Length: 260
Image (tube, rainbow, N blue to C red; front, side, top):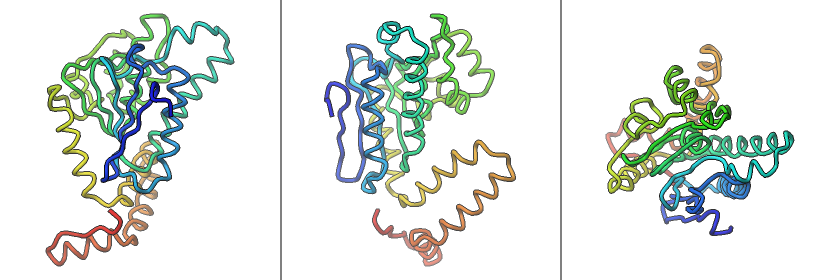
């Protein structure tokens, strides 16, 4: 993979970090960046050694959204349809990954960059980070970013962000539900590591089942959601990890997860 686009690192625990590495363009989602992210996510999807993914960025910003200069160079409807469809598929690949994805946010996360934060399962932000869906300032309503934004942030707060294009602070992003934690810059990695350790202490299979259920049931009516959740729990209960966990609880000991 082109290191100018993306850097992939992995530790012995199965924690993978993908770093967007186009600092000069504030890690804008160019066609090349979208393709590189999607390719990396696809490779990781079936790798059972992966336990957690951290999405990070180099330079002063997390992600400034789509690469506008690249976009205006091809003012064609078909091109824009294909571009936004490719970006949407990349965003969905984050949700479809069977392990938790944590956004490590600093600097700005604007437009599709804010979408990227909202699409991740968890997010830890520096208190110096700022967030906006700012396309409307340039005559372009952030339609695709609105999809995960509305699934993270209450409707009126999401709409305010979308129609004003204004920035919110990391503290506001936390209070609205866009990020889990907003911490001092020097505490970001420590905070993420605490999340990682907690996740690694759980069986991978249970988290994979749970993540799939979480997103599928969110789009359902309550009766269908309960039916799906019932089936998921029953299937999970038949897994060796769950049986070990319940047995360990009854025997008043810590469980030992196979393959974790």
